[in-house]
Figure 1 (cartoon, rainbow, N blue to C red):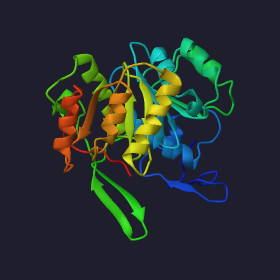
Figure 2 (figure 1 turned 90 degrees about the vertical axis):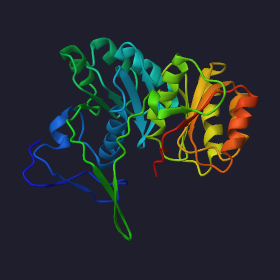
Figure 3 (figure 1 turned 45 degrees about the vertical axis):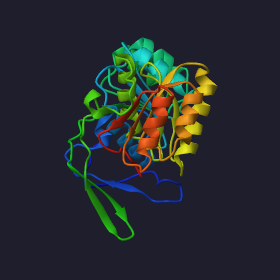
Length: 305
């Protein structure tokens, strides 16, 4: 699609009764990266923005499935098809109609798996010819090659009171992001899972909780108005799909009381990562030590409003 001007009309906005358009600020637009499928919509573009920001956190083969700007399943593995299968199994019900984001080329084996289910879009660095030939048979399935996006240092959003601006958070989430707060520390493998959880929780709407096992999300709680409900929602998902599987937990904000830690301990959580800053931090640490549960504070909060 050639862009003749800087303003491109979209099918409609968030809802069919709303008009929508996008202003193109660079020589290439999102439409230049589409290789198949129906026209990209307003909601598609918002989901693309959210998914690509999250995917950039990961280096190893990783798949994430986004629904309404939030990841509903994220997983890393030795091969991209295994990562996709794990991300899909994280919450197959929510994945229905979602957008798949992959950081490796799509091969035919992976395309055959994707083809069996209904998705809105697939976003990947590339597709081999056989996989492209198969997936393009679904006329409404949007196929997109991952666009090259320039990292802007400032982000903004419009409000009734004017545009709000802030610097972007480019802090690397790795092992150094974690600070041991309890007497007991956890294994290297579970540290890797905590880091994985934090990379995901950064991109979920607050209040947000991520439960992870072997670099696969097994329970997500997001957009709740209190942290206990976010945790309960995540645990419910974990019990539905993963039953007795062990897991670690990351929270985008601190647990202000021990009620959440009690729930985690009761359900077999192996380690917790959260920011410090509560007046009850000492009580949280004391409870963790009492229950022999490794607790890590993180360098800064990861709220997303």
